[in-house]
Image 1 (tube, rainbow, N blue to C red):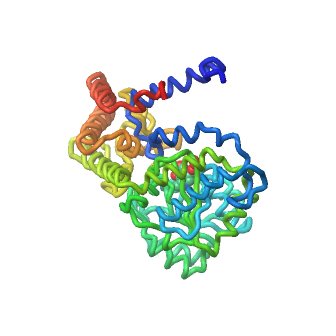
Image 2 (cartoon, protein in one colour):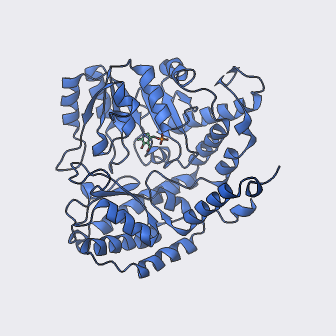
Image 3 (tube, rainbow, N blue to C red):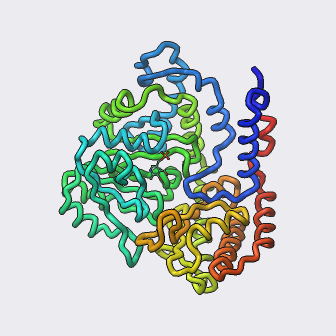
Length: 422
Ligand code: PLP
């Protein structure tokens, strides 16, 4: 019963310092969010003690009556939220959900076609050091070098030439919506399974701000912790006909006991995601990203060689293009870090700089929207970022006034107020 601060003061300090960091900076990593208190509570609950191998009603352990309630709620809410016939809520993370899908539908050596990592795809979509690329032949599609967009006619031609077993549509860094109906048509034409990985934009789908892939795809995977704002974890949605295959690929295929505290937290996140508040938050998220993109394509910014891929965004992130700037992605990331804005550098398609440096930034708005930011605050953030990038590209940064503006925003929007006393 001793508190953490007594049992392990070093870890208690690290957690407290991390809380201070989250409170005192502007979090703009596109894959991150702030979970609500209810999700933190469920994750810190006694459900972490329970072994529950199997599925609700068919467990390999006794005493599962209450965790069954939690998992059934998570399943039913997920199905309802996305209009899916079946949901498996057990994947520990997005990568685990993706491995389960690949093992369910492919044999080692079968061909997977996904967006190249260097063009915004995820490493689980065929990168050579990942399971997906080690155990499968890979045919990677790319974005068009002029427009930065996925050209569906080229995808079709490549699919006809490559004849993949599975096509994955989804991304980690792409600022536009995907044409799921067209992907379906192509998959049907070549006899491939269509898998959509909606990890990044699932929250937008839940809010009705992005087309829903579920009616088009054989199987859909997602993380729960990005725009969906739930616990760090994964999920798989599929048609009833694939239910057995998917369930058995997750357990016993590649996982043991499910994380019941995380599954309860997923149920909570799905309940919240069905609310009007959540929808309004996703609207502020997209609108904030659009305000940022507009500011970064203004003349005073582009004059410094800074630009935005595809000229704007339809989603929760903006991809900054620094190929024509003296400043590289690493330098830009470091400068923003200095003023208190956290982003990640990101390779742009056909990036001339090495992967540890890059010529791009990925900047996302979900966490700040969860913190309460609306158009006014996002306009201020956009202006601060524009000033940092302009000055950085010109090689003469005066960061003190910008730091003060960031500090004002963090003070105006307190995060996890009173958390120490919860
Ligand atoms: N799929 C996509 C599209 C992602 O962007 C990510 C994470 O960034 C994942 C899967 C993997 O999720 P996780 O980090 O939870 O394994």
